[in-house]
Image 1: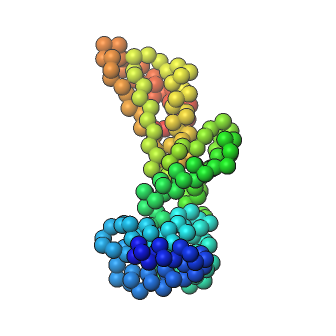
Image 2: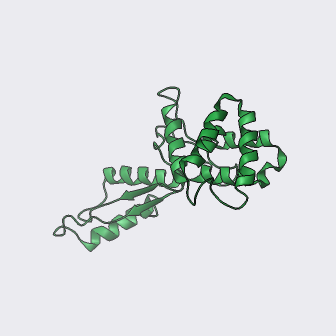
Image 3: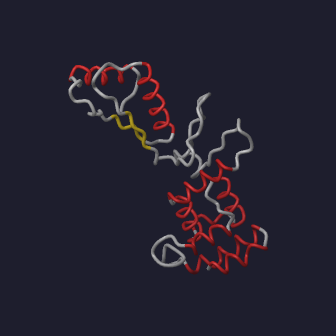
Length: 203
């Protein structure tokens, strides 16, 4: 499959898509991957010959070539499965971040069909995208030490972590740090939780 995918590189996208589709529709009728039971180099080579359609617009371009009935084919099922693989999504997000046009422009990959919850909220002014982040896989943490009350530095840290967790549909973990047990008090712990609530943060 790797040699086959490489040999297609000299043709137009439309011709490559039709060739790979006719090959995979027969090959994937009874299996999930091109070779074996996991994602392999063969799958990635064939995926690349389709134009590496990991983003929404690229998948639509493949569907446009294949026609209206393409969504019911084994090739489309395989293409969306490979595009949803965490390693492929992370590689796409990194590649998009590397190829951004200028230092002021922020570039992020757009995954999944429209309306499926894969859309990200627009970035708030002054915030940068997380390099390599994929929706649903971001986990941030806030580790306060309950040896005092929250201060402005704590508030900034927790609000930024909460923003990124919410934006990337991930989660925020608040875990009390116990590095200085002699100064820790239950009063500070309950005060920190109360203050987080006042800030609108729900870990």
